[in-house]
Length: 229
Image (tube, rainbow, N blue to C red; front, side, top):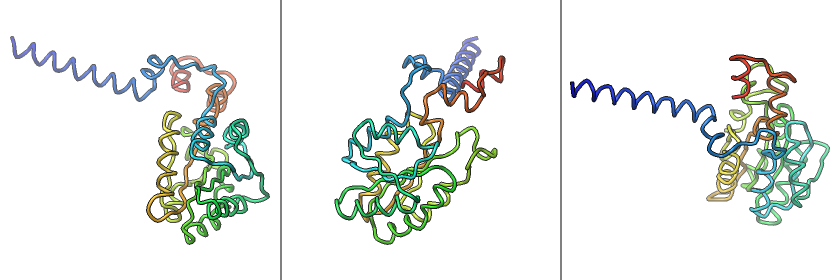
């Protein structure tokens, strides 16, 4: 009887652990513990701008696009000068020049798909010159990758051969540590460019992402719950 009771307790513990892991993966436990406000106007772009400002970034070079708009808006609000260019390669060349002249990391931001691919030549130039540079690239929402979303291409594999690191942010809570890691990687040892992919679902406010993924009306039942998760 003692053995049966022990096995029962062990099974119950495993089930509880499995449920906890599932809850964490779905973000349910995080929402309960941190009182997530789904109507909050704050967005991931503000976190990006805060990290850049903390590392002494004064200029952000870009060719604006919808995928990266939250980053540009937040940088303007926080005193980082957003410099608009006529081509993505020009934005990266300018960030490279700032890096060489100031000794600080140069930063450029480009929109998804063709915006990212247009920056390839300039990134290769920064790699050859060993310039510490951070390239922020917009991307389709995580749930829409590989499903024909606007300007969705495999960006990270493209830059793995051109940069010291090519990273993709998967959740809002990963924005700050990922960017800190990217900047440190670009600066340490032999300097060079680093690419960070920022999907729109980690940059925009929740209600905008919800509308993008599920339409203006969220369906009821299991499908609606899955969209919200």
